[in-house]
Image 1: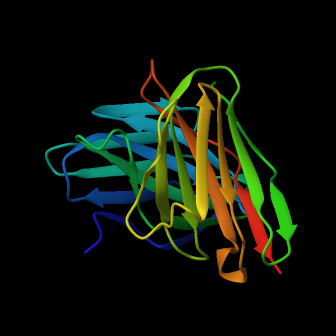
Image 2: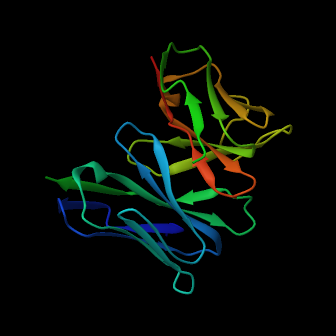
Length: 110
Length: 115
């Protein structure tokens, strides 16, 4: 079993829909990251969380440390949100090395 | 926000030659940089961790003589793929840790194709 599991693997939505991507992990962590990777390959860091909730524009990330679970929400989705969304965790004592989920491919159709 | 610049974004090289990839933190000091490799439809895999001024720490299974990492300053780390072979073709990404924030910032990635 992978240490970081994401669901769903693939997600197709219509423009305007509310999107949720889930991430579960099985190890003790110091932080959880949500990353966005566009088709060209470049990675953008969206959020770094250690507790609670963060919001940036239409993106919201939450984490429940007790349940070892995080969600990324996109409100009013747009075709430009189409990308791979990756969850990654920094394990305690790992010198900030990240362990990555396999990613969720999101396609938002106009 | 903090910016990490990775260069080149794409490179094609002949089998047997060496390729150098640079990773620069543009507006912060990166005491630690990480190099990742991504195979098609797979997760990013950590190759090595480099700390400024010291030898890189390689993950199990990564050949240190093949993937040379140098972190000579607080803003620059390089990955050199030596004697490249077609199986080294992949997407390589660096990330740099901002000591003050603890957050990791990523480069744009380098698509290496060995022919």
